[in-house]
Structure formats: C-alpha cells, structure tokens
Length: 53
Image 1: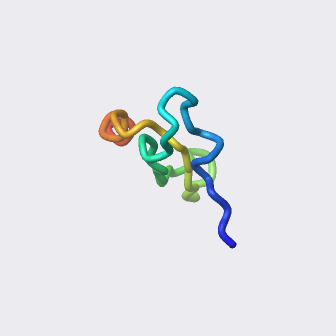
Image 2: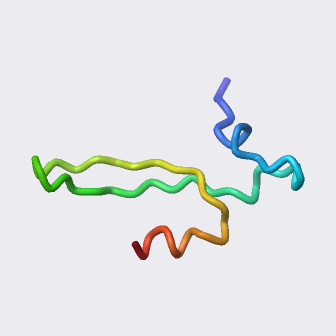
C-alpha cells in the first residue's frame, strides 16, 4: 500500500490535504554540475511563486 505523503502536512484547521501540492524542482549544482531534484509540499497558492524563484 502506498504511503500518504500529505498526511503530515495537513493544516489541522482545514482538515483537508488537497490544499497542498507536491512540487519537484530540478537544480544544477554549481560545484559539480550535476542535477539534483528538490521535493517539497507547499500550499496551492504558492506554486507559481515557488517556480519563479
């Protein structure tokens, strides 16, 4: 059975995990040049701001 990743990120007031989105951003290391993937759970309102950084 799959692990529920949003369970720990729920706001107790909203009682709903659908207010969050799992985002994966690819970043290039300036030191080695290798790409790494950064995963985060962020509120739906902040998705556009997250990728514009």
